[in-house]
Structure formats: structure tokens, C-alpha cells
Image 1 (cartoon, rainbow, N blue to C red):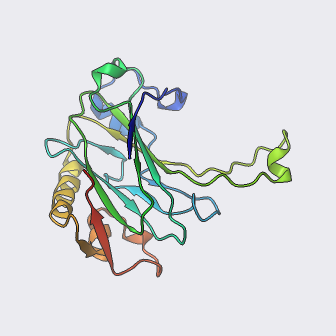
Image 2 (spheres, helix red, strand yellow):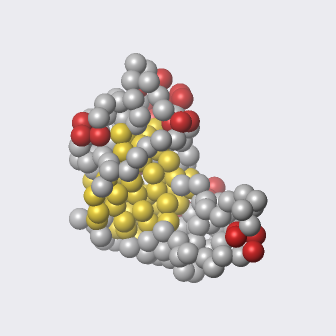
Length: 212
């Protein structure tokens, strides 16, 4: 399902003055293309944006975006949000940003999306929608600061391409040809420099999903 709505973007660490060139954003944006990392089954599940290692990507005219989901015994829906980077114009200036999209719970695989043209630097954030866990004594203690949510995958979409974007766009275009089918797990992850994420839980071949 798809739901649209503006989401406030207030994280001070991600505020970059509009005067900065996009080349500077590639050096300063604190992204992480691989999310997850907590101990529970839902939020520890592997989640990765198929973007350069810098987590900054120019989709170009093809406008393909890819997200990788790893194995899970109990898959949960995946939420993706897009919003203009603070300091780069109004929300209305970014077509298709300020949006939230939810992908249904699914098995390991790659999902390809087509994003309308990016007109301002746009923050892309993805995270699983995990079931609410019952409160524990530690969680109800107001003096407890134990974090229960994992960090999301976080990338920045820009207009000006770099050399590393070319390889990613070519790999995404190849995946697009396999929509509705499957690809070699090893070859797919190698193409994005993510082969170190493979474990014995991964199937040899993974589906490529291309929702409308």
C-alpha cells in the first residue's frame, strides 16, 4: 500500500546549508546504506539500500532505486520515506518527496522502485514496521534509556552523478530485466559491494520484485 504525507525532518545532524554544492554533500552526509542491528528478530533483519558505499546516489533518468531485504523467520512490512534535505527549498519543490511508502512483508529479495525525478537533495530512509513488543520493567522505568529500535538505512538522493553512481545504475538496470524472476544471490550482492552480508541463511537465488 502507498500513503502520502509530509514528515517533519528535524534531525540537526542532517541539516546542510543550501549554499553547499552537491559534491560537498557527498562528503558530509552521515548516511548508512545498511540498516538494522538490534537483537530482536524484526529490527535486526538485514536491510540495505542499493546505492554507493557513500550512501549518496543520483538516480538519473532511469530513476531506479533498489532495496535489499535479508532472511527472516517472521517478515514485517518495510517503510520507506522520502523528504527534502533541510535547507534545500520547500517540501513542495521536491516532486515525490515528502512521501511514505510501505512494502508488504516479504521473504529475502530485492525490490526495485521507480522514483519521480529528484529536483532537490532528498533524504531516503527505510525501516521495518515491527510489532509492538510488550513493555518490560526496564522499559517502563523512566530512568531507563535502553534503545529498542534499530537504526534505519539512510541515503541521500541528489541530481549530479558521480563515477560511482554509474556502476550502481548499470547494476540496477540489469536487475530490472529480472523483474518477476530471480537472480543469483552472490552476483547481485557482489555488484553492489555487499557480498560480506551473505550468510548461510540466504537462498542461492533471490527474487526481484518490481511493484507498480
